[in-house]
Length: 281
Image 1 (cartoon, helix red, strand yellow):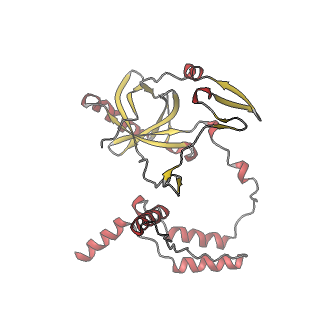
Image 2 (cartoon, helix red, strand yellow):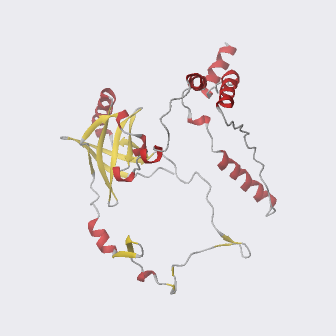
Image 3 (spheres, one colour):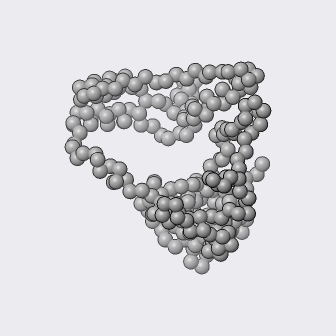
């Protein structure tokens, strides 16, 4: 099934407009999800809209409410909410450019692929892509989709461009409020050296294929076993990693020294393949 465009419109830079289509870069539905089932009948459970002390209510009697203080709500009609929605404009105007490293990762939300809408748009698209790459910059703008205005960042990505939605400033918590309980003491120099050596030994190029969701894989195995067992109870054995916990610097020092001495960096799939090719040659 062909991917469905999240947004279709044009990117505008000053007087230049580039027709584009934007597609989700992340797949939804890859994770296992569950429904609540009534065991005696085997049927899924549905939910009723219920008011405490009143019971089930009609859908027509339901309004949206914003809590302004405990138990006090401002009630809003659907028409009132629709009236203030931003019109879904078909233009993403790039209003500012920043260094790629300047945006804190906390602000990034969802990635999307941006492609030229047709052959005529390709030349201007390529010019913008390569200009962003050469300048080492990210373009910022605001994208209006389904009545919601999103802050977005546009950057070069291989042969194409990647657009990422960003959180607004009031959607991000300041880390200092959580970190203020941490003291200002400096780490022991030898401990720091050992920890750095361990990091160096485990440093390798990032390869997403090297990592798997072990819980999701175990769930799939369990579902398959349960289906074959025709309803009988099945317990999936999962090996838990053993971790030794030390209570003082001596334990930490010993653990780090042992780790540096024994730890071998995990080779990526590409490294293994190149090693195999060398042996064959």
